[in-house]
Structure formats: structure tokens, C-alpha cells
Picture 1 (spheres, helix red, strand yellow):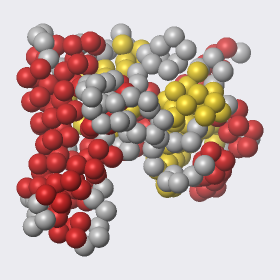
Picture 2 (tube, helix red, strand yellow):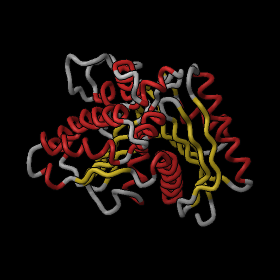
Picture 3 (cartoon, rainbow, N blue to C red):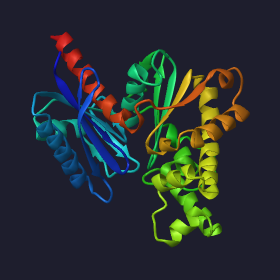
Picture 4 (spheres, one colour):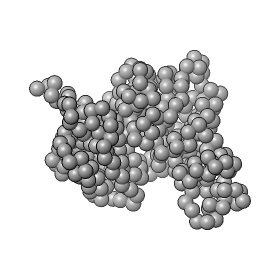
Length: 324
């Protein structure tokens, strides 16, 4: 398949990123869209529009499209059964996209395709036991076990963001019925909520002044203020990192991974998030798992899902060709 390209699409809880990717994993064109406030029909329209824009910019042959979507997927039917943070309910996503785009379309969970990219060519290359968390609006999880992507019985495994770590904790967001999920306490949404709380408690801090100025205390601003040395912002990231570390200790005990890869938009905080997460994991996890696992940032950063979705498309095309 030399010279052919696919389009990878990463749909997060609030943003879509699409890109034209070649077999060397170089990205040639990128398209970004906001997904806030859309119903299901509008969400599907946005996805089609983004792919068409990327396809037009490429000016050449596109062999297929891969989608990573933040939904539980039944791989038997290729249906997105439910998404926590997007309006996707029992939708035959791949079939709809294939019909509207007139291209082969393949779909998987967004964290699954992200871990595929990091395992094959990124921060987890060479490892057979890998756990990945994507931290943004929500928290997604992907697993490589014994060198293979683990999808479970029907394709819906790896929802690590919805492991409960505090049974009496805050109610989880979107369509999750639980309380105290990892997502409820350590996602980008949780970070923003804690930033507002701290800003109100400490009005003379950088966070407090930003809130008074009417600025949205979302992850990017909190990270920016933390990198500038604002103690309040640093404290928020330490709190979120510590909560994340509680979850990592649990995951280390269950899966005994060689490496935990942290991706998603919040990873822009780098070691300001990872250092407290590592420290808490080491305090809580059991040996030998705690002594062997590495906790690292995604090498592909926020593009891991997009690149992994393109990889998924290449993989499926090869499988089709081999079956002929």
C-alpha cells in the first residue's frame, strides 16, 4: 500500500481532530472542530465535514477513514452503544460514515486507537503490557495485554475512567450513573471545577485574578498559570495528579503493566501532573508492580488518537487485502 493515505479522526468529549496520515505516520493536513453543545445529527454532520475538508486538502487518494470515538462499541455490529460525554446512542457509526463519505470506514474506541499508536510507534514501543489513559473532558482507557490490543468480550473493555475509587465521591458526568469514578475526580473537567473552587478561596492568586477577570478556568489556563509559577494553579495540578495516582495504584495492582502512558489535553501539564501521580502510586501500589511500572507522557501527545485511528484504517485495509 505504498503512497496511500488514510484519514484518522479522534473525537473527544469536546473536540474533534482529523488528519491525513501516510504509512510513515507523517501527518499532512489537520482539521479541528468543536463538539460542544451538539445533538447526535449535528455531531455526525461535523464529522463528515471535517473528513471532507481533510480529504480535499490532501488532493490525492484517500484509502480509508479510521475513527476513534469516546463510546462503548459493540465490535460485532460496529455500533456505538453509548458515549458518556457525547450524544451518541446505539448508532451504527461506521456504516453511517461509510455511506456518507463513500469510503471504507473503521471505528474503535478513542483510547483504544491512542494506545495502538503509542504501543506501535510511541512511548510504549517494545512493551507487551501497556495501560494508557487519555485525560481531557473525560478519561478514556486503553490496554495492550500480551502484545495485543485488549477489547474484551464484545469490544467494550478498558473503560478505566469509570472505575470507582470513591463510592461516596462526586457524581460522575454525562451518561455515567456512578459516583466517585476516576473521571469524576481527575479529568480535565474535574481540574476546571477544582480550579474554580481554589480561585474563590484564594482570590489574590493568579487563579483568583483570572476568575475575577471573567476568564474560563479550563485546563489550558490552569496549566499556563502553573508553568508561570502560580502556587494556587500548582496546587490544583498536584491535587488532580494525586487523585490520578490513587487510580494508577489500583491499575498497577490489577494489570502489572510495564508502562502507563498518560495522554489527552491535560498532559500539557507534564511533570506537574505526572510527578504527584507517580508518588501517590508508589505509596499505594503493591510490590513488585509498583517498582517496575513507568508512568510517562504520550509521545504523540494530543495527536495519539488521530494517528492511531489512521493506523486502524491501514490495519483493516491490510486484513481485507490478505483475505482476498
